[in-house]
Image 1 (tube, helix red, strand yellow):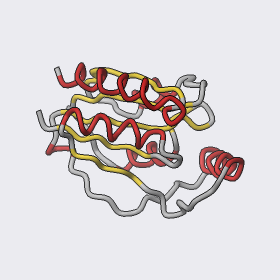
Image 2: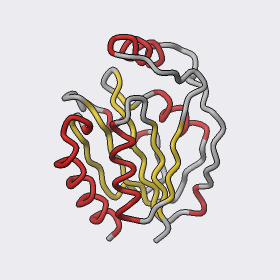
Image 3: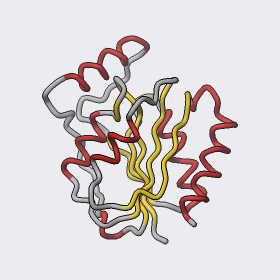
Image 4: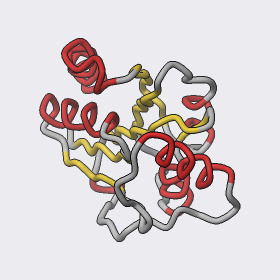
Length: 158
């Protein structure tokens, strides 16, 4: 089964999960980056994310290559910002026609998953959502989260 892991990660949490999934499934990795992505720390990262989420403008993505037709399973990973999936993932899904695919979803958060998985599903009509999960503070819990990601990835493949 040809698999892609498409994700956005500003602070590295979703990247950690995506890399683990890639290694378990021999998947293609498509990391999305915004045009305005630059190193920020602490509250600066938080306020930038809130501004992107609450703003009416898109978070323009740097060019990427992704053809959903080439994949049997697409795993989409997003951080949770302001209670929903990060704006870069929402913008990616709005500009990419993904239809008739098996989709698995993961979100990364620091204790507030809220309705992010349901919001992601709503952005993917016409697809079969085969699974979803969430990861709490991956970088702070590396070993346990990596095992959780590996186990989940193997279940999504089957």
